[in-house]
Length: 330
Image (tube, rainbow, N blue to C red; front, side, top):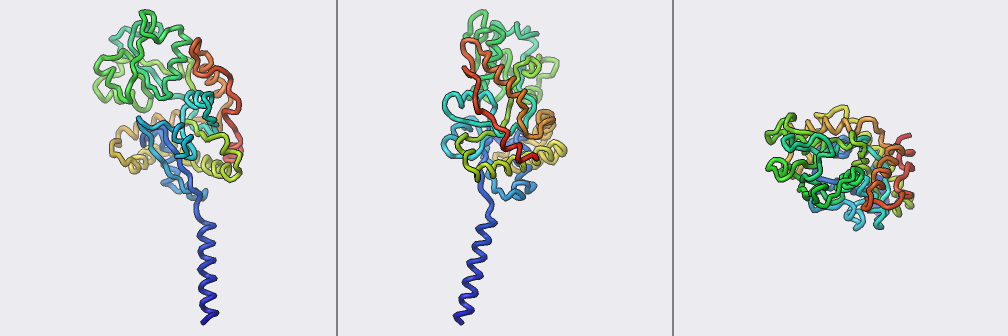
């Protein structure tokens, strides 16, 4: 009886040990915005079991208008965040040591979309106009662009009036602004769906204006990378995430469906998410997840050209690393 009890006890202990050994590593990802196809690669990686294959248990936290991903990361509410590089570099210069460990997005989707009846045909026509601009770190590319054009943002006759734009397109629809900030995959189509046509609009893509900056990179805190266990988790996370992104590119409709299944708000529609995923695929195309140093240098150069009010005041040191992607993508 005693031997049998010991055998059961030993078996139970071994079972617990095996369970502990097999327990997936927990990781929390903070998104830059709400659940939508902009983040499809991560939802696909979770849905398809790509994270599970890497022994990861990933919690994906949606963002929103009142959520600042960098603050969430700094406060310990996430292990990894998605951010635009202008915001990340500005945060780094202010003391939050963010490091870019991967760059799934190759191209920028940012645009300034203007009403044609405003008379705007080129950036020089912005003078004296009202332009809608997102804040919370999203204003940096715009401010850098205006500085390079020599156009003040003080509302003067030779400058532009900056309207702090909410995350909607109401100002252009209600003629409160001549132009508004839009993304190729989201707000532009909200304007179209609201009744304006492409012929009613003039679009200025940041890519075409030579002021595009890197968007939707993967960032962690610098100190965390000193921990080999954390670094290993990030290698596995990036590898699985990029597998998710390439699946989403190749299967946009299925990816959009996975996003919809994860939208707890119920606010997203199938039409909008399928269209968004089609546009997002154009931005992630050409990236295997590794940051292109030439794109990084272009971003930094754009941000340093901020005139009297630059986004960053000096060339960042240590703001990105290839250590994770070198291991994840080999």
